[in-house]
Image 1 (tube, helix red, strand yellow):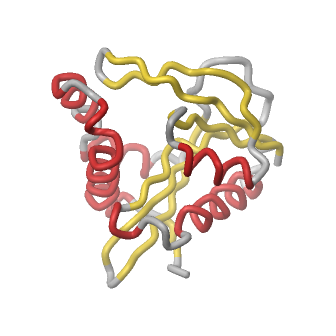
Image 2: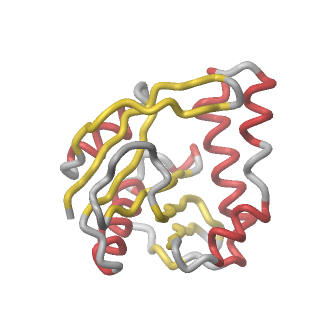
Length: 168
């Protein structure tokens, strides 16, 4: 079990690295290079720092030998649709490829659920790529239910994501 700690704005560069590396390694082959570049251009150091400094967001990082190897970010729901009052969104959860399969995902989800509850949320929402079967199975084990389809944009390419919700 890898200890988690709350993320701070000082972690912005490490979180950006985990996100960029993991997203490209996992999904990069699915996209036209121009679409991928357009999407990745939104992953700036400033954008990560802004979220980490905004009290509407909460994040935790997992470390190994002093390096950030995974993270989870909660924030106000930006997903389309009518969400129940008291919904918070699990915005992102990424783990560096070399550290996947070590049960960090469940640790990060546990942290997200506990933190959402502590913030008074009644529902936790997320979107997950339709073909990310491993992540979908993990969320289903927690009791997340599929509540609809979402077009997740990567540049000009629309991916099918599934919207999921967990009653807390």
